[in-house]
Length: 275
Length: 276
Image (tube, rainbow over all chains, first blue to last red; front, side):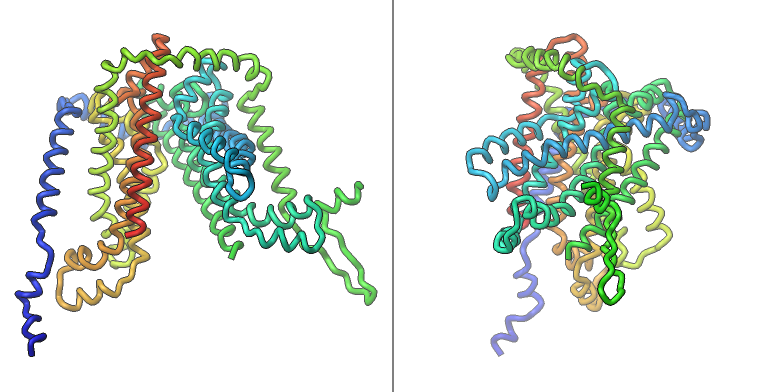
């Protein structure tokens, strides 16, 4: 009888935690927010010109100019998109070439502790550097062009690639190498049949993931004159050539979606293969 | 020797004693490797990769870094405001974007059986919007509503929304629907059911998504100034054009330190979220 008495609706409701603290947290964060907004954001109001520009831009975006799309010259859409893709692809490959030895040097199960520490510090320094800063520095020293973009992409991808590859290497199963040892395999055979099959599918999916990111980054590298579609896109927006802008944006969207589709498909296939 | 090399590309066939022909398994890997190498070389030619020039000019690169290295500490007073702007822009953009994304992600996840045509349209639009970088939005917005932090904040909000909503609805589609149905059978309204049965299951994931978005946004907010959308980018652009590398060095240093601090804090917070 006693237990049933406790189970009234009122007693259960009293057990329910009070909403007051949450309410206070909400109120305080709202006030902090409001102050933050007032100190940084100045809204001058949308003038009529802005609305007109917005309408013109919207119209232009849905009427992509065919001359840009069909132009096969240096400032045609196809060449610019391919240049963007080339920068991202080459950057990823070069980044990978540097990232794999770095990752091996900084995995705990391969190399001694002190080498790990040095390499990990190096990786985190590279990682912290914003990619577009690298772009600016390469443009200043090597000269504008796609080459500067490739270099900054390459260095920018080393950090993340090696960080993810380290995780894969540290998950290696040592039993396989031991079993091959016991079977009398040479070092080369151990690498070929023990190491590469364990690593390859994971590394490929990491690289594809980074390639997706790099293609997105490569579209904005253009604003620092480091090649790719970005420069022309910014010029077109600044000059308010909206139909050209529309064509380029459509091109970027198309390229990114196609790439994303294929890389997701390859990645799911690789993930299926592992199990 | 040549036979061994050919064997990589063309699998051998063995004829057994009983006349059976055994084929080796065909392997695409060597062909793909060669295709990737050829494509890389083609890309290198297209982007005019020039290794000798890299070595020639690498001196200029190091000289640039050397000029940055004693950062001009006096510049700190001038760069405080843009730096705070950058952080506040990314905080505001992240919070507003995620707050809009949370209810929308419930609406967009397929396990509540809402209007399918609308869902497909909204998801399609989101995946289109997600492909464009923040900078493009900032550039467009700074022309429409004027340069300044507002354009930057709105573009960060749009970007955060598109990312956060996708991650959230994919997570919500995997939750256990049992509690939801139980609550629904007691006669609770749909919103109450979502808040009490679904939200607690995705709470940790939501907060870790917020932190992830914040990290990415701080990085992208630093660039936004380049197109006049507020933040530290404006200053970086100006100081670089005026060739004041000491000032640039200080800004890069502060930016790197900020990013590292934010990443460390969010990593620790996320560890806690995963545990409890």
